[in-house]
Length: 108
Image (cartoon, rainbow, N blue to C red; front, side):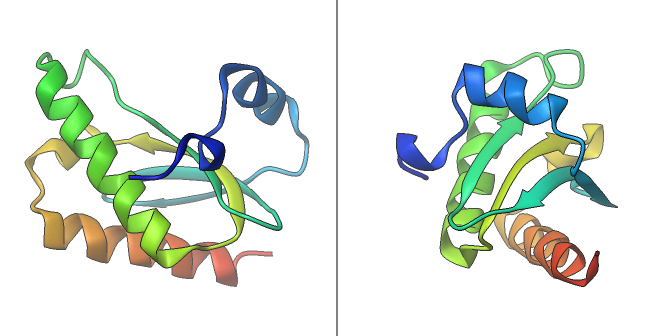
């Protein structure tokens, strides 16, 4: 799990959404909106409409934070999780997060 300094606070989250330089990449895990940064700052958004159980939502969030922490992609971003992501195993989540980071490095 990422330390609190590596996660976006509520005020940073609001400011991030107003940024004009945001780049968007997609895959089966969800959507990553990001800007290049000197260090990793990330927020993961899960929907209670897609998964009613808070335990499932929090487990997915912790897994994504852990994988991105190990990858250390030097971005400031938000991951919006897709509805199908709650059924993925940890290895699938890791592969999809790696794919998102690879797509982010290729994007302009």
